[in-house]
Image (cartoon, rainbow, N blue to C red; front, side, top):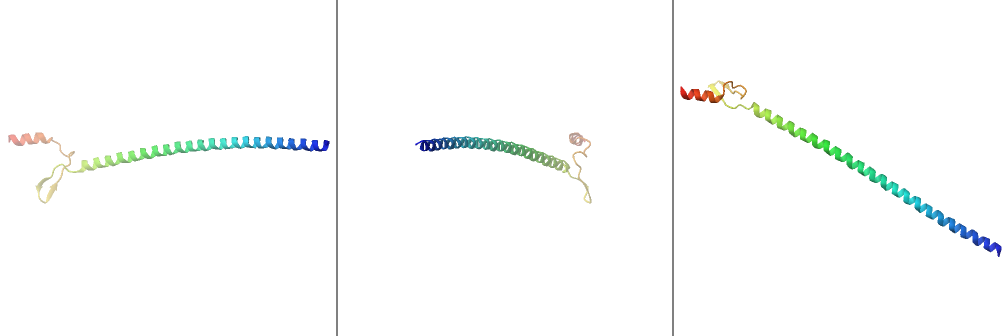
Length: 114
């Protein structure tokens, strides 16, 4: 009978030990899963921040290009002649607005009084 009791005690201790190991394993597994989730969330947040920084840089670059295109268009418009003076059919002269020395209003008023 003592042998039987000893065997039963050993079995019950093994069962208790195995239950304890299973509980410990579940706890450790849960901790590892939680750490992995935290790490994934941190990496995702970091990626989102990197993406938003890249988007901001891209948008600034696009705005810069648009401003550059507007400036180029403005300069092109400045180079267009405002009037065409043809003193001789063979000698065509097209002044730019920066080439006009006397304001046109003064010239028109002088011509009207003559």
